[in-house]
Amino acid sequence: MSAVTTVPTSLLQALKAVHRDIFCVDLKQNTANYLFSEQEIDTATIPQWDSFFYEYSHFMFEKHRNQALAIMSCSGLRMHYETGQERFTLEYPYRDGKEQRWLSFNVVIESGVIAYVTVSHASQDEFLRKLADRYVHNKGDEFVCIDAMNDRYIVMDGPESGTQVMTNICIGYKAAMERYVKRYVAEEDAAWILEAANLTRVKEELREKKLYSFSCGEEDEHGQYVRKLWQYRYYDEVSQIILLRRMDITESYKEQQKLMEELHQVREAAQRDSLTGVFNHKATGERISQELEHNDDCGALLFLDLDNFKQVNDIFGHQAGDEALRRAVGIMRHELDGEIYYIGRIGGDEFVIFLPHIGRQDAAEYYAHRICYNLQTLSVGSHSFHQLSASIGIAIAPHDGRTYGTLLRRADERAYHAKNSGKNRYASR
Image 1 (cartoon, rainbow, N blue to C red):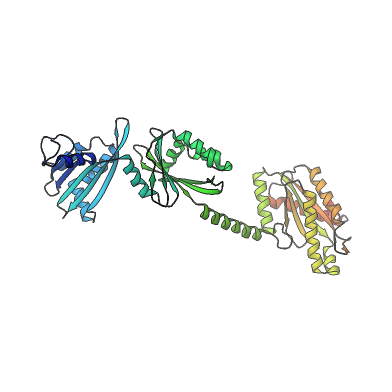
Image 2: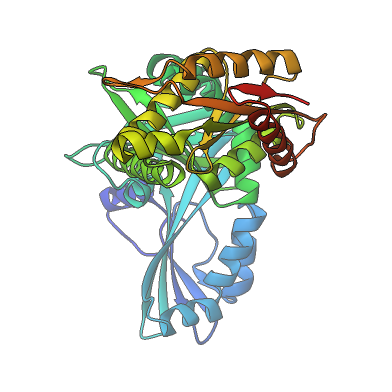
């Protein structure tokens, strides 16, 4: 029979369209009765509910079946009631041939004694709407339900008017993703996004963690740059149903970028000499040490000591002396233009120059010569500092040492030798 009790044909058809079975379960006696079934049954009485449900759930995936058996047993239903869950719904996917379908168990428990269990076929649209209600939170969010086992997907949007569901199933996730990336994703992000969104990669990430996410730049329909956050998670690992949520994080991204830029500026300021703008003593050692480590301990270090700088301060004043230091740095930068270099001020009139791509002594000597020659022409306003020059010591890594400290000592010794030999010259031995 299709219904346990006599009901009007119209009501019977309505029940069949929505429900699979309806049970009334006696939680104390562990018995049950069919109130309705879409299938022909021999008897409405179920003498042993727990055993019956074990057989009833045979079509479910093993992982879901074990979970359902624990919850839908008489003891499990009583436990839910005792914890305040008088009404709850369970939803499980199952495989019907090659098709993915969903089943909904709606439970109502009265006084902890009687449970009414309604088993319903969840339509695709209803299933998607429930997923969207659960996961799509912000206006404009896009939500994609991916059937990774069959390379299919369904797209939904969450606009202001409420969740709109696109119920048609699309085939070919990979091809669709390639089209989307080509059309919308910023050029600098396109290549790595295709790798990051590859389903094989997504499943590997989800095996390690519950949520896999990343962000990228995209172009909206008005040609404006926006930032989108992509979040993948499993709705169901057994049937490989993966949920992808894409949401606009442009405003928070801009705020974060602004904060990062401010932090970068603060960090840069802390590393710079306030007078000349070059690296300060501490940052000079750190930067050159990093370069040596990343450049196989190669490079040329020049230790530059300004000759007669004290006289400049004594004769023309500290303001002119400060300007002379700034212009001396300008000369160094000009002569090193086109070369990768680091300049640091490590004392009142002492500077260090590091050239990471210079490994030959003659190349380092060329730059030392140019700097010595041009410092003689330095002037500030009407003041020409003919007495100002430089004594420069040169150390080449790895021949003269592999660390900043060792190279600095060698270059300092050679600068001292140059100064004692008459100033305005360099020494590399």
